[in-house]
Length: 433
Ligand SMILES: *Cc1c(COP(=O)(O)O)cnc(C)c1O
Figure 1 (cartoon, helix red, strand yellow):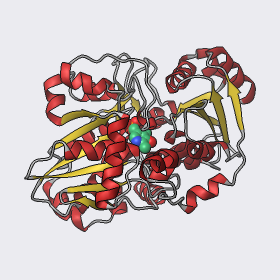
Figure 2 (cartoon, rainbow, N blue to C red):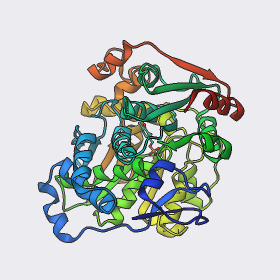
Figure 3 (cartoon, rainbow, N blue to C red):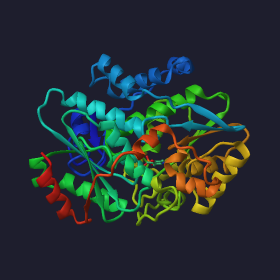
Figure 4 (cartoon, helix red, strand yellow):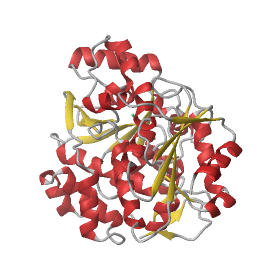
């Protein structure tokens, strides 16, 4: 299948090109030319399938023309060696726990899949590929761990100095091997700008093969559709309308859900749950998309002022605000509201949310009707935000999972850079090959 650019100024490319380039030459994001729907028979047998089986069937719809099926199956099963269970929280509200992977966040799914797909495409090449990734916290750890030790690939993680939690930081600064952590004196948006500038820099691209592992890469973004199918498969209340709430920052996760719906997945409506960075919430209300600088919140992986995947949503719906608003409802929460939800749900239900999942949960509480069941994506384990979560529910209430404890023993190795593009370019020119 070919992939076109959301800017429509360059010819469509094949999957290998889209995955290795990340961003189209006209600066647009790649979109698959077709979205292959499932038939009714598939949805009948869906509840009988395991998560891995479901993921493989969905992967075939996306990548079946471009990857040998036996290899695709192996790749999917290897990437998804953990479950995404649906756990009850309230009568009609369920948590889709996406934090059972190695770095305890949903980004493990896309990152692990992408690392394996890229390695598959590189098998017959002797070129080294440099993956550039900007992170506001969880992307860096998921990508770094997903790619750790993968032959022929070097990963550069750019993160904003002082703006990611200590637990997030150790997950990408202690790895060594083919992973370099770059601590940028700026914001997440600065990191993202540096990465985008590098991709548009012709001289740099002549010397180095660069690719992106941000959620803009189709190999990271499309696999996120897998677990929406798993949510429907595991839903114990199939006779009710399903509403899925997605804590959103760069909007890759939600966009993958919209693709799943186009493939026939019975989702009545999606909810985009924002923190105070409510650009999309405002768009849904007014029809105007006005990006602005991000502000820092306790749900920091959603502190994004100009969500990069939003153009995919506009493209998917041909800029039709009414159609977008029919499929997506917007909610936004302040830090105070997030804290209140997190504390109350722990006290009343014994379920410990993380600050991102709390936005999704609250949006369901604020909107579900009698005949609806709500599923929110629990995008990270609460222990990834221990300081914030313990300040709400009490010190000592958040046990440190073994996977995270292991990271804490490592030694931080990172390189400090200012936010000027020239500094970053010079660094790459000198270090990368
Ligand atoms: C990345 C992230 C989000 C936002 O996901 P997008 O796909 O960028 O919208 C939400 N929660 C957590 C914990 C994350 O790491």
